[in-house]
Amino acid sequence: MRNQDLSVSFKVGEKKLFVIKDLFEFYVNVQESRTAAYGSNTEVNHDINNFTEGSRKWIDFIGRIVKEEQAFERRMIEARSYSRRAASKIAEFALFGWRLDEFFRLIGRDRFEYEDKDSAEKFKTTLCAKEQNPKISMTITNSHIILLQIQPFKG
Image 1 (cartoon, one colour):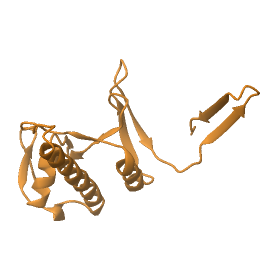
Image 2 (cartoon, rainbow, N blue to C red):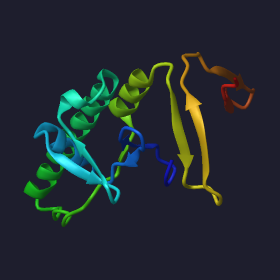
Image 3 (cartoon, helix red, strand yellow):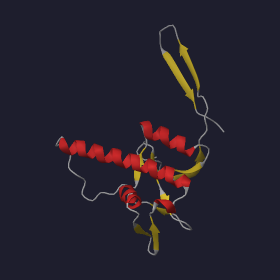
Image 4 (cartoon, rainbow, N blue to C red):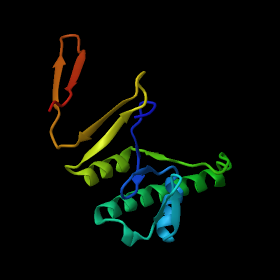
């Protein structure tokens, strides 16, 4: 979480995992089966066959977002209300709408790392998703004031 928004970042590697600093470049590397350096002495060949089947579903997810972001950028440039970000690198994608739905669909029952970058102290933990109906209560008073309360999940 950053600036009250959910976002997702990814890591790559075999024995040691490295944060992917540019997801656009990563996706191009996979599409073109390029080899790229991570850290000071690790190289990864991005041929899709070098990734596990589970990793491939996340590469597809990254690809969908990359294409969406590129299409948005093209529309903004064509509308002349936007200038191309010079050599910008994006290490994380915002999660909203279909992206958030797809993220939780792909996670399933797996655990994932969560980091709150908004709090005074950085907070990291491991989370898992589960399907559950929220507990919602509503109170209507004589003065027509409606109080809606949603209780957070526990457990």
